[in-house]
Image (cartoon, rainbow, N blue to C red; front, side):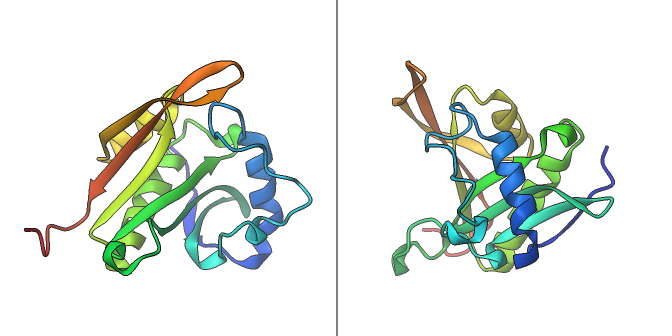
Length: 167
């Protein structure tokens, strides 16, 4: 188990987050092209206040980014895990789960009723982490992406944070 601490990101974490993205990107972790290394992490539509980082021995070793699911008032009660990544040298030690739990706590603190995410079908490690943190599969978009010559499912998962206001 890791001794990593979780904290809010700062603009000074940009280079470390870029390095983690570079080390973890593959066609089976993201349907998007690899992030361009010359574009700062926080210039990609993610603000520091929406990122939680895992820090171990003074170094950022992972992150979770959250944000609105759909930017319309009728969906304001739903947040989304936009991305989650742990440096490969630090994987398998519970950091991903700790980041997911921190993202859940942050979404609750922001008043979210639900937290949802998308994960590619072949990403077994991420699926196991999310399931261990209480997320359930709510749908599968079969063969949604063509990645490296292979059709890949897009798995939709969610966690109910509060039943407040349920019909």
